[in-house]
Length: 179
Image (tube, rainbow, N blue to C red; front, side, top):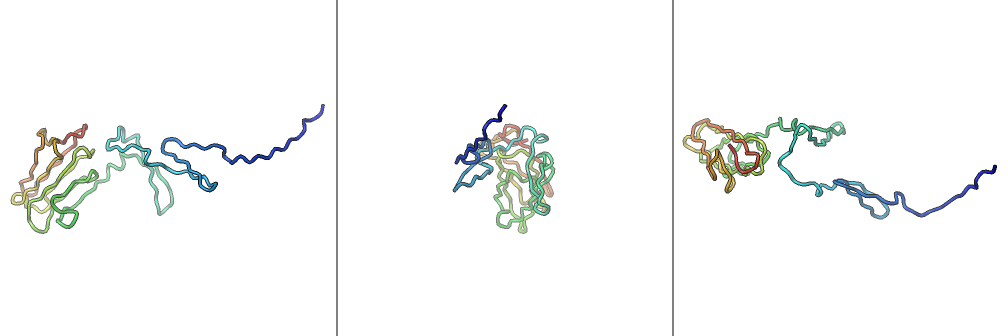
């Protein structure tokens, strides 16, 4: 029995012939060079994570050059503490960032202080503290976003009016206010 004849075929098909990305993976070809990248625009923005224990983020340690998967629950243990001392960006009225955890009002010059909070953007409690100890004379006002509740009252402005006073306000799960 004879062997089949050897056949040699030359094609000019590029390798790979077809490449597709899906989800957050983007594929591009320029001048014959294929590039694989992440398309962050394909991700929806969200301030709520259904299960922080089972949701991970990728982080890179620049010192070691190693990537790590970190559960979001571990990140929530880190507190963002700001001292609102009246300097630029830290003066009244201060707009609380969704990442702020503790705000200590400690201005160099005694004066009333206002903190505006959009509860629809927050998932973590916010603690506000009179760090100077003069809130009886210089009240600290916590103002919710328009139409939002604080302590079950729509558009309620909570005032810290006691020296060294503080409050912890926790956002409602539906983003309509805080208690």
